Length: 360
Image (cartoon, rainbow, N blue to C red; front, side):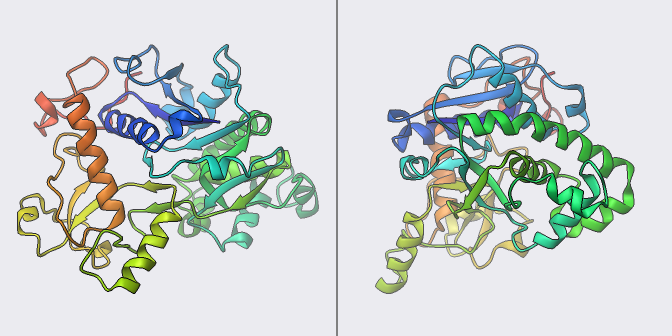
């Protein structure tokens, strides 16, 4: 199998790519499959010698909507001499960091039968079909719209585990639908307002577009919860002070997860050493985890990694997130200055950091 993530060249993705690849290697996936970064940029950047990389020239529309890069780069990858030959492609985001060998999931994939994680808009099937009836080839002709779909639409999100030939068929239509749907969201405020609450449609167009493109291609997705997000209910498998029954339940939950979707990290409030990294935001989503000490939304995310970890009651996602960041910093050092990234020294000067700047 072949794991793939879509990125650009900037500070935001730099540490995510290295941590993602490190997690691929340390979980044994390197023994069974390959890992590639498909990166939207005009030339290979300065970490292509560290991470296997396919360089994809930028589509002009991505300046307006950067998530287009994922489908666009995949189209170009499949059309290139570097096209993947493995039977199964695992499409992930850069913030999907692995915790287990993916082989048991890969073995379930076959032509026409893919796997995907449950989307955050699960249960919104009726609303999703209303979107489809507005953007299909014959809008508002419900019969014609439904006939355009070969199978029912599955409400799935990354990671996608898809047979090579199926993904090759899906990606051109996925790219086309992203552009068409984003144009509609941009031009039609009423359309955006109708669906923003359900789907965050101004940003998540690419997710819905994948769902529709896969259904048109006749590819069904089995929905499995294979990742744990930073905003999900916390589990504490490493808390040796918890009652045995509670800890066993949390360990079971951890073992059912193959990756995290990282974003934030918390320390227990009673961990006094951790208060030096306390953030002022994030309290409304802490769900009892304690104090937020790290966030990928912060421009210091690559340079300031809270360490050491508390010995008790740190939640699973925070533990994995900070451990991988620490190990990557130990292995590769801080982000070097480069024409591919705009930053101050060590990313520490807020007047010079351009965290999301992307090399053209």
